[in-house]
Image 1: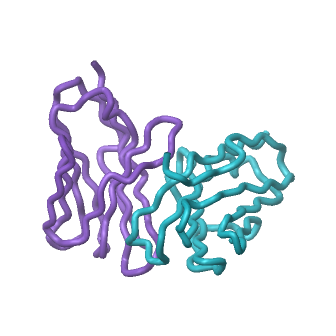
Image 2: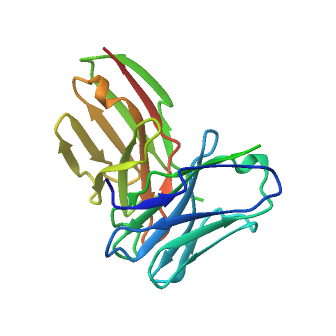
Length: 114
Length: 110
């Protein structure tokens, strides 16, 4: 158990819809990272938050947004969903803001777009 | 754009065999991490290497960081079915984002 909690485990929705994925980091961790994993693209970094502020941005689409709340949990919002958004979305957390620190991954949310 | 290439993409071996998988890049990394992801599970960190030429051993797994910090290898001795999984390498440049390779899928048959 990594201590990182992601909900829900599985989401099935239709194109054009929007969903919110939730992540609670390990106790004491200030950084939260979001990744998208698909079969053809592998694990892609989306965005990082540190102590409530955006720290780094990766290949995140404009239709996607995220935020980290004062209690350090984070949400990833995906809107105008397309078939290609079907993937496994992972959240990871670490203690500091530097990515050299080990990241601990949650179990992921599997998003299926019909 | 940092690009981490992992090879082979897929490896199927029998229990007891040895294997090496590789992670290569044209970029110099300040650190490199290896993760193992079992089917349906989340990636789990195995090791972090930071010094060029560094070798770390984790039971039957040996990790090496290239002298120039552009490549890394993972050697597994006497592979077991429990080693089956997707092995991911991920590198960082300074405090930039962690870039993952696409992974090597290892299947160890009894």
